[in-house]
Image 1 (cartoon, one colour):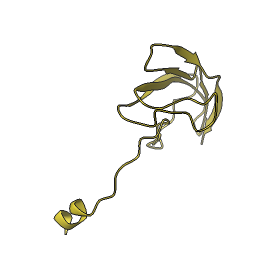
Image 2 (tube, helix red, strand yellow):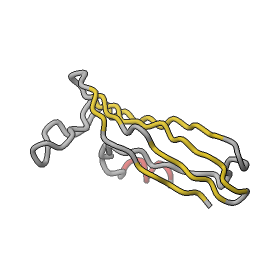
Image 3 (cartoon, one colour):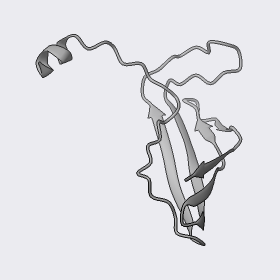
Image 4 (cartoon, one colour):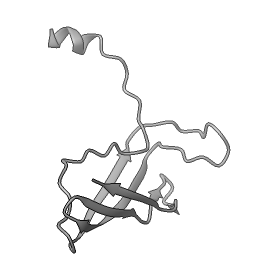
Length: 102
């Protein structure tokens, strides 16, 4: 069955954003936490779908995720800075995001 699935598998498409999976653990109250997320697209779209958009081909995207344990059941977080390093070496800062884990 696995061989059949491998033979008929569709072409995978590169995506520029990382899918983040959490294991339900949060930082203890008063504890800072840092997790680094990076995603490199070795082969992706080489032209922008809309002028000004990022082309994923040979692009590294990442963000440090800063967390702080507020209570034993709540962790506040900040993704800062969101960044991309393009195939031609440009470093782009893409802002920040707030997040909460319960």
